[in-house]
Image 1 (cartoon, protein in one colour):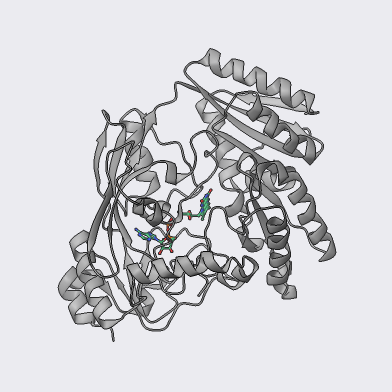
Image 2 (cartoon, rainbow, N blue to C red; image 1 turned 90 degrees about the vertical axis):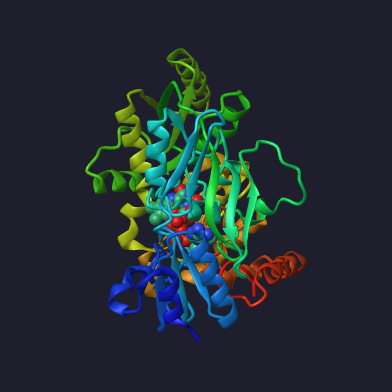
Length: 457
Ligand SMILES: Cc1cc2nc3c(=O)[nH]c(=O)nc-3n(C[C@H](O)[C@H](O)[C@H](O)COP(=O)(O)OP(=O)(O)OC[C@H]3O[C@@H](n4cnc5c(N)ncnc54)[C@H](O)[C@@H]3O)c2cc1C
């Protein structure tokens, strides 16, 4: 049974919401409405101010065996923050302080509820750079770590995991642990910190994070490379990487979708030729270096039958292009049934897209594909007609099966959350799931933290 009075004692009366009409926004995330899990009926939203309040809440919940659902920015795309059982929504929004931007160690220390937007601003003000850019800046630092978010700018420096150097977390039993630190090397025992990264909130509540920063890039340029044929675009990607140029991002988009995003933003996609595009972001120590990389990439792409190459040099032009790519998902939000994030070995991206096209043809629909070409991580966008026909799951499973046949995984970015669990039977490595369940039991003996999220039960 939930002890609301005790929760009020811990966080103060103002920070507990019990009225349903005041908590609607805490009951959903950005998962497509048709597949989003249904929130439970008896939910209390609690907004702690600090780690010790969270520790007291979890101690109480663990004794009462009350489910606790951790909520960051609510931008997740697989239902992980939705309270699916009667219990507590633990909102991290008040842990919003940036404790330090440590220029000497090139690290930032931030509470988990700091949004990506605020963190990027603080880093920029300090003259530094945080490379990853998952599309929604409303995501919180704790959520980014809990989901090991990726995004467009992962080619050169990797996903969020590559930046996390230290963590503070509260375990489901209410104990507080500190892992790592401002350290670039740390071999002291098993790496529990990396176990918590991408634990989707099932092993602990992340309360503070130390992240690695980089010097601000002195110069950057964004190429938009147009092709008539998808395979020519995809074939260019390994050739660019083999050349020794490592771009910050290599994204793949197609004309219809990127123009939809441009219209949604009241912008104009700069390319007029071709129908398949690579967006390549280059960075360097000076303009000459970026220019020379740009020439190298252009030569490679021309050899791969590119029909046009544009370069955006000003910061404004480049951010407009990135914005059109980042908002692609939001621009199609009204007409989608689910957004997938399968990952295949990078060299198999073209084959995978062809197989998705075959599936689309068979089900008499259109399935746009776009995404992180150099990471092998693609977003297949399932449209609303599949919802109307009641075949979203069937189509999704066929796509997953094709990814698995190519040596891929069913999720490379957004995670399992709640909505991917029914399809985990397609990934039947029994021992792997058994070990994961054992780890969960060790951290959370009463299964109170994010029950029903992230694991084959
Ligand atoms: C427009 C758009 C674009 C996106 N683009 C990308 C992208 O490019 N790449 C990508 O990887 N993702 C992307 N996402 C997905 C999403 O932004 C990320 O998964 C992000 O990491 C979620 O963070 P959040 O704070 O919103 O977490 P929430 O949605 O609140 O929660 C997500 C999961 O993390 C858990 N959690 C949250 N905070 C904590 C914490 N402090 N401690 C423990 N567990 C916690 C929750 O319980 C839940 O299981 C996108 C989403 C949108 C809407």
